[in-house]
Length: 489
Ligand code: HEM
Image 1: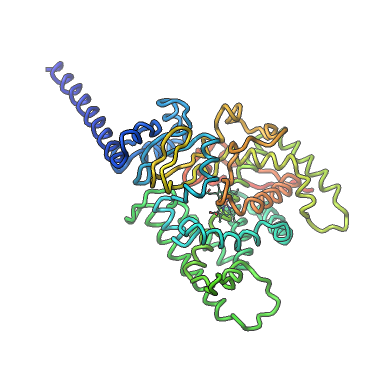
Image 2 (image 1 turned 90 degrees about the vertical axis):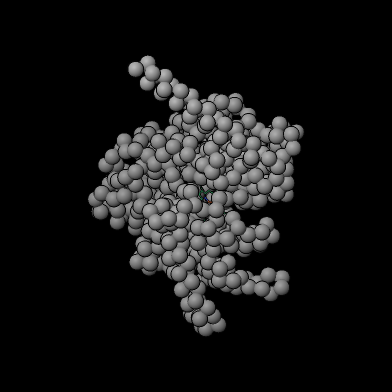
């Protein structure tokens, strides 16, 4: 009787495995149906998983179990280090790219690749944001919006505001006792980006909007399931709220058009309202709102997280902390006594701190992936990328490649001594026409924060061994519960 039961279980296991294998083969066959036999042979190696789910389950399991590199690791283990694999994610056949050369080729090739973000991201960021519009529109809006953020003049103007915000935030937190350090940093970076884009400073509006953005973000890398209880459903509601708030601000601005409003300096909303194309057409409300939703989100989430991680890494590594602090003390000493705050001249001198930030960007991989779509069939590294397939640029694998970065998991700012990294091996801000337009602003914010932190404070975490969560961005689950202790300059 017992042998019979064991046999039954064994047959059951074999049957399930067989059905799983056949279903996977059929799924792959269906996805490759449109390709001729020579095309199919030239596809990169890979595994498309089960119908509908594809590799999504494996991806979520890897990230949710705290082993994000095990997802791509399993492809590398099974198919070798080809740097390019086929798979199935977010409801479509996908090419994963993990090598620096192939990433660079895709990012620099606007003729054969356009943006290809999943439906969830597109719906949440808006179809008129940079990930939904045509290449020409993107070029025009990008030119209009990036110079007022990243140019030397602009950074010089914002520096004073950032400096004051950082000084007062640190002072405030040091008397607050335990704080969620990450949550407070997000509020700080949100305040800065709101000032640049909307000229707003009201604490109440900012706090409530930042909370709405947190909801929006949880849905961005989730599956597009619009059912109550799912992250995407909550995120859609958050987007609706953001649209309402921004529409109200826009209506208010339009009502003031042409009226004398005193000395107010122009913010990004004014620029977007003013702009006309060659036919004299102005941007619609939807276009302005989607661009703002995208910028306000991109402009605070990543900077807030990276600032937190850089602070944590510094605090955890006393030698690195000491060296970084000495640099900031020397910079402080070199400042004329009559000078009130930091200027770009001092920021330029923060060479070691810049390496600390680069190393944080590499190790944390805040933007671990980016999405494109092939507009025609392309050959990449000898493999076929079929027309209309999604391409996922797996930046995380590039930054954690032991052949490029020895002892990859070690926080080691000194690895940035010497010549700059080889093209394509360091992509924290992407590359090409979609290169992050806020890269300089982000580095400025982080540098100013670390300058003041190193000189006068220390971080005491309540749960230093706290578990990490990797989606949507890597963070401790307690949002870095800590005390900011003032030491005195
Ligand atoms: C540490 C901070 C930041 C990181 C790591 C980061 C990373 C990135 C990356 C990797 C991309 C490229 C996405 C792609 O190739 O599809 C990107 C795009 C973008 N970022 Fe950032 N970013 C940061 C801060 C900022 C800031 C401060 C702003 C706003 C001022 C900003 C605004 C944007 C926008 C609007 C895009 C879309 C650009 C386009 O599609 O043309 N980012 N960012």
